[in-house]
Length: 266
Image (tube, rainbow, N blue to C red):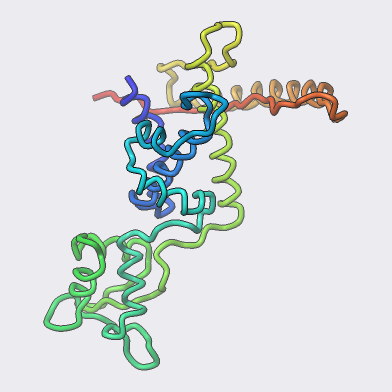
């Protein structure tokens, strides 16, 4: 059950990660940090809710050693998109620009023959890719237009592997994190809450037989009706909002999202 839940949650995340050049090790480190933070911060996982969590207890909960927990706590929380570990293709590019054996006049990266004796693109990849094959690295760098090939020679076109995201892209990704995080928070809350009346509102409607010719019409209806609903709720939230500072306040809202998936007809 949980494996299916994890697969459905992680699959779109992995698509986003790969699209934005986030390697597995980086995502793994992020998840490890979150395990440690949740185990320390959530009263639910303490033996005594009002007492400070211990590293021994966190080690038991997470399966990590105390040494590893100390290492994780010394690192900054993964909140910046630029704080990614470099993937294998990036490591190759970095070495090409830094290792003096692969530099020519004025410390500019040499054009490298793919194969051969001595300094080649193959030797560069073998030394710095961490075990990836030369062909996989070369194909990837060509795909992102970091290198070009003329005959059997590879030429560096730009030193970065991934295009730096625009400000709008960064804002969009942060919003995606907020949307999905809020939904998952509500799901986690409902999983623990036993009282049906106290569970948070989480519902969806779907139909698996919408034809392609009617899909656009349904999209427009969903968008129009959802906008009306959200505008009305926004007005109520504004009218109900308290800024007098006399009571503890809560962040309250409703998220609406559209989804579709082509049916597997095989």
